[in-house]
Image (cartoon, rainbow, N blue to C red; front, side, top):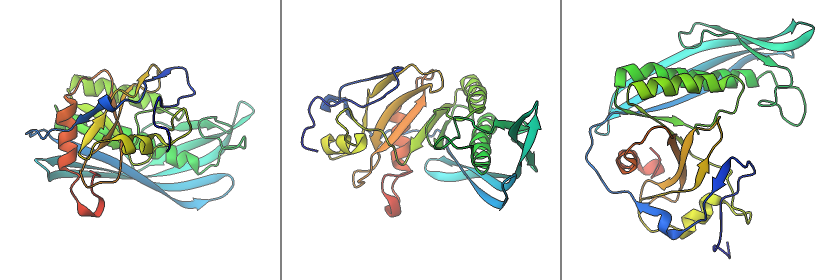
Length: 277
C-alpha cells in the first residue's frame, strides 16, 4: 500500500455509510477486572450421502463457557438433516427434515434458485441446505444458553449479518431474548473480504496504520441495513499477534466495549494462535 491517505472502507450497498480511515479512531484496549461469563458458539456440518435429489448431513454445534478465563461449562448438540426435492404447486423445491434435535423444529423449504444460496446463476447445490441448517442451529443454541448465563457475553464465529433465507427470523428471536436477559450478542470473523475505496485490503490497511499494542478501531461504518443490525469494529487482541479481526455486536445493546474486548484479549493468549480467542 503506497497511499494510505483519504482511504475509506468500500461498501456497494448505500445502506452502509463508511467513515474515513483516521489514526485517531484507534483505541487502546485497557485491561479491566470482570467476572462476567463469556461464551463462544461454533458449528460444523458433514455430508454423509448425496445424490442429485437428496442430501443427508450431520450437523454439530457447540458452546463453551468461560469465567475468569477458565472453562466452566460446555454444550454440544448434533442432529441429521435430510434434504430432498419436492414438487409443490407445480414448482420443484428443496425441503429439509431434521432428525434427533431439540433446536430446530421447522421443516425448511428453499426455492431451487434461491438467490441467497445460488452460485453463478445455476440452481442451488443441494449440499448448501445443510450448511444453512447449521447456521440456524448455531443461532438457536445461542438463544438456548442465554437463560443459563444471564448478564453475560456470547460470541459467535462469524458476523451478525443475516444472509440466508429464513435466517432473519432466527436473529430476531435471538435478539429479543438477549435484550430481555441483558446478554450481549457479538460476532468475531477470522477473515473478511472488505476492501477500501482504492481497492486495498481493509484489514491490511488498518494493520499498517495501527499502533504496536492491543487496540480496537471504531467508527468504521454506520449500518442502516435491516438484515445487519450491528455495530462494526476491527481489533487486535494480543500485542504479539499479526492478525486483525472483524468484530461486531448487536447495535441496540450498549456494552462497555473496553470491558468486552478486554475479556476477549485475556482469552487470546494461546501461543498456537496469539490474538485469537
